[in-house]
Length: 144
Image (cartoon, rainbow, N blue to C red; front, top):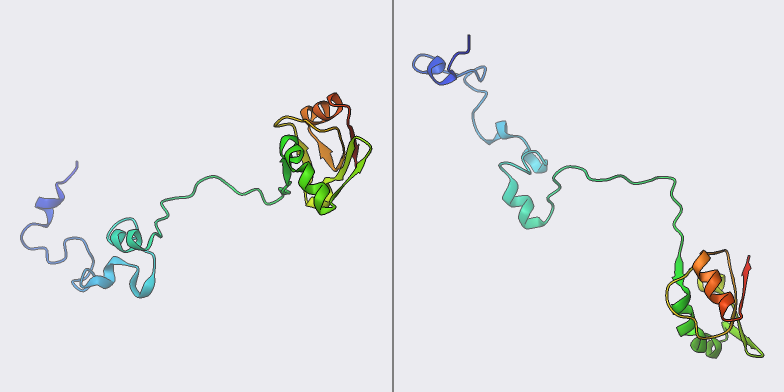
């Protein structure tokens, strides 16, 4: 049968279930002494809140085998075409602008944006929309 803890320790009990009489004495029994993180969500909440170091639990995961891919929309490449010609990163072959985006540090060309220039682009990868937009304008795509 359950026993009420309040009445159980009322009166003669000196330790109230805390072991010896020394065990619940002072701040040392609260944990996190000498710079530890114990109590960061409880009795030391304000310290960690002011420092901006609150970490309540873990969220998500990090894929250790993922490979980052740098990508750029074809619309942004189209907007930069004239500047790339001026800087010597692209060449003009008749009415065609030839460009290797690997020199810009781009791995993949995506299909966002509008294409207004006729371009010949060389890249490691193209999305289907990017390839379709370039070829629709009369340009060429080359996978390196």
